[in-house]
Amino acid sequence: MIPIPSGVRVWIATGHTDMQRGMQGLALQVQECLKRDPHAADLYIFRGRRGRAQ
Image (tube, rainbow, N blue to C red; front, side, top):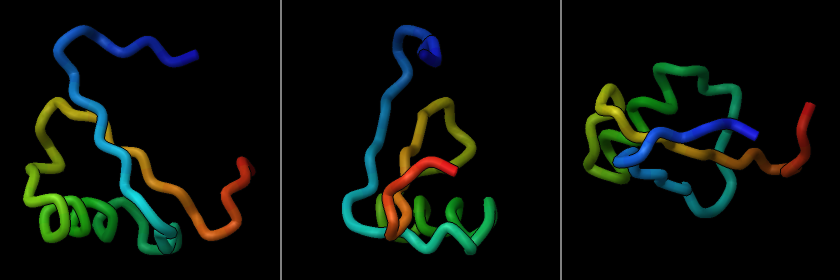
């Protein structure tokens, strides 16, 4: 379990995400698709195509 401080918003990206994009690619997706600042104090959750933990 990961503790989440109060006041932090959690954003869940729907659909499949190419996890090979790396951190910069995911940050760009947050900026372009969600119109949010990826460096703000929010939490973003992405799901790969297989949907399994590695």
